[in-house]
Image 1 (cartoon, rainbow, N blue to C red):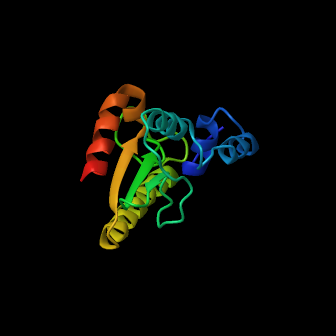
Image 2 (spheres, rainbow, N blue to C red):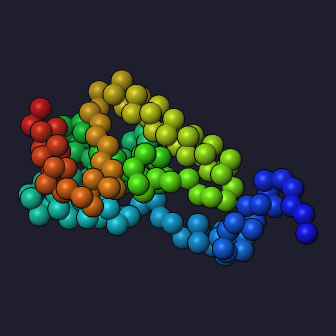
Length: 146
């Protein structure tokens, strides 16, 4: 059997069939993710009050409306952070590189627009929440005190 082209190789490299991969990907949430909930609980326990699902460009995860601060809790994979969690999948790599690069560019544009509208923005990465929550808290408190 001889294989040619990227599509056929990607089928071999993925351990799941196309239908199962599609089902798995459809179950990935964009709201109330594990890192987001962990950060919210931590902030709430420290006495900080915030809004979630606040309607604002880019859909920030945590918002302090009075201070005009928007916090984005980004997954390292989906927003192409560059850490150990943000590897490009081995199957369908062309698609994934384009997708992740477009996500990163969209994030950059949204942050630019929010800053233009007078909002301070902070991006907290999934790996930062896993590794050092007190550093994240210090960063957020310094944002709130400005």
